[in-house]
Amino acid sequence: MSRSERSPLLLAGLLAVAGAAHFAAPRQFDHIVPRSLPGSPRTWTHASGAVELALAAGLALPRTRRAAALASAAFFVGVFPANVKMAVDWRHRPAPQRAAALGRLPLQVPLVLWARGVAKGAEGRS
Image (cartoon, rainbow, N blue to C red):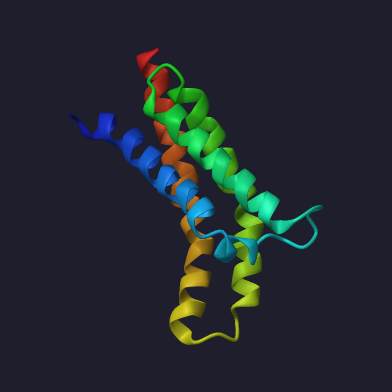
């Protein structure tokens, strides 16, 4: 399996694990849901986990890969406010936790670029 064939499956795996975590340990995600969103944080936690699982499934299938990759890039942009909230909320925590929260912010850029790259690779195979 070539690197270009592995890349979408690795991204799908990352999203699947993250999505499952939203259901297995929702409390950690509830705390980073921006307060400005209506409704219960748990609803948003479960909704974002379901979206991640759906994106993972879409990325795993060559037929839906391009659309799922583009949707993944948009999703990574869309969850950025939660990462900002986490960084702000954790600013007084011990250094390792603070570093982890701050590290999530620039991590969104390579995730978006990765998803766009998967979309572009899938485009060439259509």
